[in-house]
Image 1 (cartoon, rainbow, N blue to C red):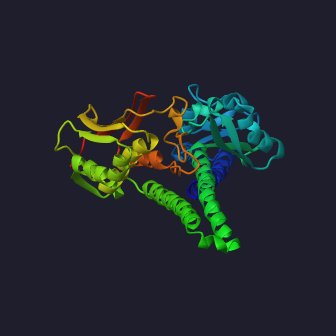
Image 2 (spheres, rainbow, N blue to C red):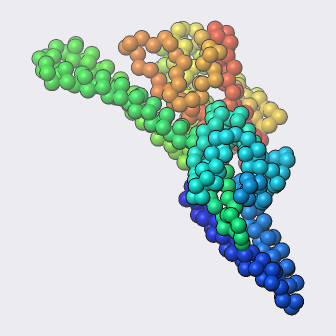
Length: 403
């Protein structure tokens, strides 16, 4: 925002300089000297070209309206945003269409002073059907200010800037902080409660079975706190990086998956589940950050196991070539994901499981969010299809591997 504000200030300053130069030239043209007349006409045309170039270089939509409310000048961004009919010559109120967008302009025209506002609109009512919003709400900065003219009432400069993307990022940040605070508060409160019980009733320490049971519960919840913090740090690491900062290497997919199966062996054995590797080519390799791919595959396999604690679960890791490059599929025959939950499974802290008892520790709700962001960091995508009680499949599509 700081850089955009600086650019805006420079643009306004340049427009003011242009207006003053135009005023001086017009005054001379009204009292022409034969030797100066042609030069002044040329200077006026050059000043107008300079103004148009300046406006077109500005990334936000910019309009200049006269005292009658008719648009006299606009930049290319405004034409692209408010088209298909060029705004020039049309009324401001007609061009902006929505009264909420026009409110700062009307305030400026009535008061003669600058006016600005952040306007919240439904996405369908936003100029150009705002491509930066997917949440149903668009946010626009509308800034209007008087612009001095050579003579007569000042014109009004109107700026429109799409802030929808920034607004959504801020909403995501606020939701993340709120959810993280809630998720951490619950186990911390439980641990604190048991500690308080020991302090208020120290004789419980002599009851070895009860003390061990309390300590075991506390250990589970401190483990949950640790997992939440680790997952939050991992998401932060992913989102603060891009593809250029990944530690790229080539490694065997089968070897990576087998390492994860070995790590999960105790859970697989306890649930009487089977995890099998069915690759189209046993020697197929991935070119990427192995740390992130370990997290991706571990979360998907562990998620299948934890969501399906009943014996008999079958998990299959499959690969095949695709038009885009490579497709990796993790399927299971467990309870599946209800259709109502499907749109939300990759959202942070969203959990589908409904089977946990009070003595079980729920997952962090960050696993699939980590999976999605890590895959996207590698230029890939992930989708999920589920028929509850029959089959659930996570499909990872990767671009052609560049070694």
